[in-house]
Length: 115
Image (cartoon, rainbow, N blue to C red; front, side, top):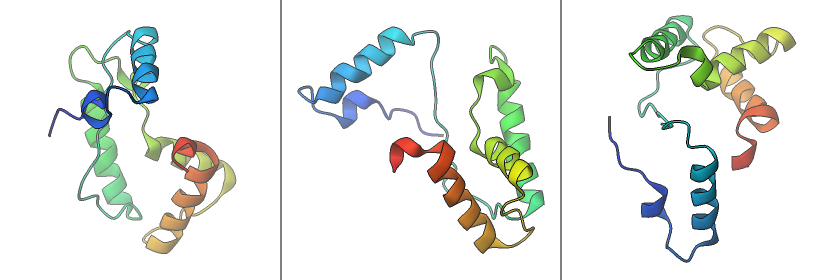
């Protein structure tokens, strides 16, 4: 795990986003937030791999001083909920359908800020 990706290190002081980031920190100062990225992600079309990732997240949610699922945003949970409701793109061991499904879902609901 690496630590140290701070917005101050990514932006110059005169960037308008610096003011926005400071305001966000002032408004939402209830606790630290972290983002975790898995660099070598497993094949998520395989149920066993999804279960491994879920177990990892559950272990993280159960560490001391963590507020559990209420404090976690985990895209896989949200995607599976979406797929269960719509019946889309959950063909086991079919990488193409998973990639396409996650892409379509993320455009609709999850990572809209990034598009």
